[in-house]
Image (cartoon, rainbow, N blue to C red; front, side):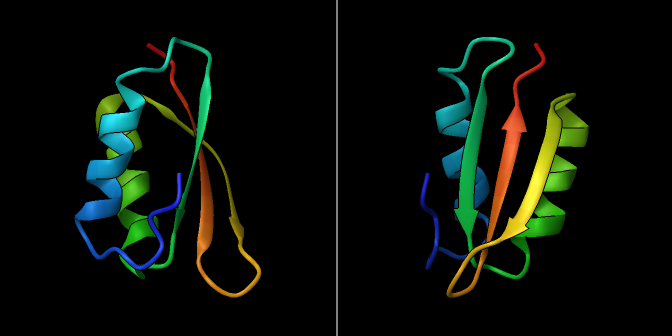
Length: 71
């Protein structure tokens, strides 16, 4: 899901909405270029008991966050 160009808290809202349709074990990728996205995604995963699988830089800026639904 591409949330580049959207500022906090919109990438987290996008993630939460899309996450609701995932079954346990599935993953979702969030692309965001807001500097607050990294700490926000990590905190969201920690608070909701989900797994932040990887974070990688995107060509042209921003980061990709891959999150696995655990429950």
